[in-house]
Amino acid sequence: MSRHRILAVVILAALAFACGPKRPPNLASATPGEGGSEGAGPRYEDTSGSRPDTGPGINPLEGSGLREVEFPDATDVTTEGGPLDDVYFEYDQYDLTDATRAVLGKHAEWLRARPVAKVMVEGHCDERGTVEYNLALGDKRARAVREHLVSLGIPEGRLSAISLGKERPKDPGHDEAAWAKNRRAHFAVSR
Image (cartoon, rainbow, N blue to C red; front, side, top):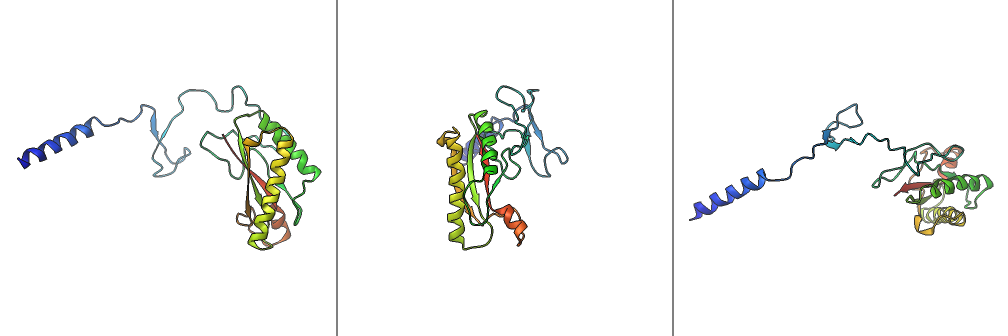
């Protein structure tokens, strides 16, 4: 009797394997040199023929503070090199300068043209000062930027703020030139 049970289990397992999910027809393997890497595994090909940078609501803005970068996919969040340039602060300050306000005005324009875009404003500091002090200063920088974007008509629900203090420097150097690059608000954009 136990042989019959074992045979039945083997037959059921074979049937389940044979009837299991199939690969979609548009599945292709990523190959080195084509945007993939060795061992990257399968990826879906876009067979729609449409370019991702065309269509309604896609109007790249020209000018200071914005880069012509494609809008991220629904699951992507931008890191360095995103569509919104960082804004910078003076040493030990979180006040917005006129130049910063001008850049944020361009960012608000970009965000109004893309109503599904959400932004995490990250407040960053240079390496000087304690961890606690820099977390507090980074928070003030991120909140100042967020509040200004809200004052320009961007809904609060699309904006969040976080302080990363001195934990993620843009420039690892230990001089004024590096510190100036690290005193910033960075914009992580998603849908």
